[in-house]
Length: 158
Image 1 (cartoon, rainbow, N blue to C red):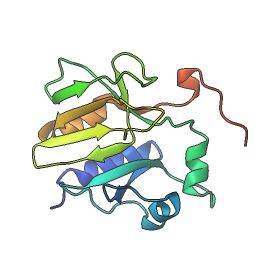
Image 2 (cartoon, helix red, strand yellow):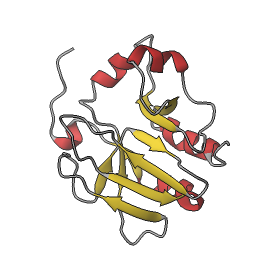
Image 3 (tube, rainbow, N blue to C red):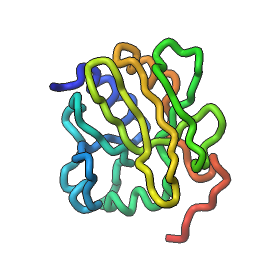
Image 4 (tube, rainbow, N blue to C red):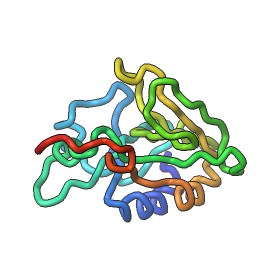
């Protein structure tokens, strides 16, 4: 089932030079993710990875490597009507009141989730869920892309 707010979210995300690619729950190698290209639609019950839009023939891996693992971020306002729940992880570098994420998951018609998968480096990532009915307004007001400089992290050498 197609998520009804796909076009509005795509417009917001792509205006910041990012996009989303649908992936299976177990993930895929970078080459296969890149071959899929941007998702035409977000789908209920599916997961998408957030990725920077590659430019001038640069590979997806190359576009992402300049970011030190940063990118999509959601400011968390506990009083926001669109926020369903959130949990701040203990192993993340994110600032208070902000969640860094790489995945979007829409488990059903009511909830929209953002999360980063668990890794050895980040065994307890933060997560948040939002009401689908408020997700466009949530992205308009609380979504942003953070850079390594925002977090005081130097970019890796080219």
